[in-house]
Amino acid sequence: MSRQRERSQIAQQLAAVEQRLLSRYRDRANIAEDQVREVVTTFKSRLADSRVLSFLPILVERGAVRELERLCNEHAGDDAAEDAESADVAGRAPHDRS
Image (cartoon, rainbow, N blue to C red; front, side):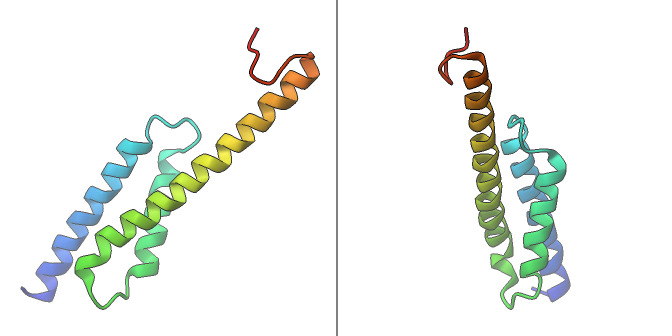
């Protein structure tokens, strides 16, 4: 396979990775589409000089998922802290929504 053709296939696979991640994180209120794209672009850039291009899509996807999950968890912790603070101000337990 020519290097040009391989790069074209890798580009298609990377586009599919981005679309999968956009779909996966679309329903998470704390992760914007721009963040997903930025994380994918960051990992593509980090790995762009890899010797074996055929592994690039899976490595980008794994790295991006790890980072996006970290961001989700980070935001979830922020939300929990805000809930606890709001509940404390209101004089009720953090998970008491009444």
